[in-house]
Amino acid sequence: MENDHSNADHSRMRLSRFFLPVLKETPSDAQIVSHQLMLRAGMVRQQSAGIYSWLPLGWKVLQKISDIVREEQNRAGAVEMLMPTIQSADLWRESGRYDDYGQEMLRITDRHERDMLFGPTNEEMITDLFRTYCRSYKDLPKLLYHIQWKFRDEIRPRFGVMRGREFLMKDTYSFDLDEAAARHAYNRMFVAYLNTFSRMGLKAVPMRADTGPIGGDLSHEFIVLAETGESEVFCHADLVEMGAPGPDVDWEGDLQPLVDQRTALYAATEEMHDADAFAQVPEDRRLSARGIEVGHIFYFGTKYSEPMKAYVTHPDQKDRPVHMGSYGVGVSRLLAAIIEAHHDDKGCIWPESVAPFGAGILNLRAGDEAADAACESAYAALSEAGLDPLYDDTKERPGGKFATADLIGLPYQLVIGPRGLKENKVEVKVRRSGETHELSPEDAVARLAERAFSNG
RNA sequence: CGGGGCGUAGCGCAGCCUGGUAGCGCAUCUGGUUUGGGACCAGAGGGUCGCAAGUUCGAAUCUUGCCGCCCCGACCA
Image (tube, rainbow, N blue to C red):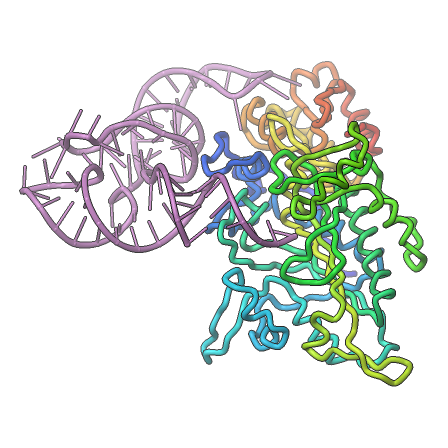
């Protein structure tokens, strides 16, 4: 690589140069805490009902979430690509969904008066791609995904990005020879999702789900339990505490036991709820709560391959429609869900894996020679250590800096001011617990660099 | 789409009922005093009161229409 000096400053940021329009007051439009905090922390700006600009802080978190989703998809064997947001109506006429999808689909006419649409999902397009290139059982299996903006013209957008009209979604599509093979792809995604949500500090419970307008006969929703969840859910309490399988699973092997372990216990959304079955759960393990749907996986067989003629030739020389599944993660919704799960009355408390910056450096007296020097030194060292620090070098008063740091929720705050420096002390504050440590500047930087503090 | 509510400065709001030169707090800018958990004093800038039509000598205020946004319900990553 040459010219990489142009990116040398990539992992460091001074607040004076950043764009962080924080709000002291809560905008009256926002009803739920994640929406309120996203507005107050300067993460998003509403441009229209259910349509948001992602300001630098929000965009950074969104990218961290995307990165985790991407890593776990790749680990599970999915291959990334990118399809366009604007699609031709013709594909949707082939599948029959152009008429079925209804007003939720944003329809557009181009200058030649051709019917186009802003994609709410991509089954048709991926099926078209598959049938163009894949004809043989030897081409299978295929597991493809992209992370892309979707648009669904919701009747009532609400709760900020939780139910926006435009939203970022990861959608994966599987192509297999038959149902048994398709179930293996389904199980891979099932396990990948457990790991994905776990890495973000979320406890997501898979629940049997209705297949909705996409159709099919095997489907699970992944639900994060939260008071502000939109739907009521019922499950065995053990499922909530069940840890994720972790990265070291045998992705080529049989994943069914892992899936069975998490589907054996009762768990269902409102529309799938079976009160009698739920009553079988021991009373002290019965959990009814509200939940946020952050992922949804489907096996739908030949629902699209049949009408769209995505056939493959089998070893017996007969052509049969390919078996498909689709697997969605609401990436932008996840950001809101993480805030719902991790906040206090002062602001966000990011899990380190998705924190927009690894640490904040608060210069309590910008302009003071000793404070400036200590901060610059810490800034360089923490950057070098890969912590991606945000250095608050502004002239704002200490109180405002503390409030902003708490609001945007960086896991650690390194607090440096003239008073402490006189005794060779700085303070490290752990955002989640609120605990503080008085240390020498050198020790504080060294211990932060070696990740010695617990954000648990 | 049904029901309800709201549009007044970047944000939070008052004024509207009972028409008469548009206000408050925060934020912003200037000067000063301050500076370890959202400082204080003095001053300044910023609004065709969502848009349009109507009533009136006169409309933020009354009437009608439109637009936008929020909430509750039925639907969805």
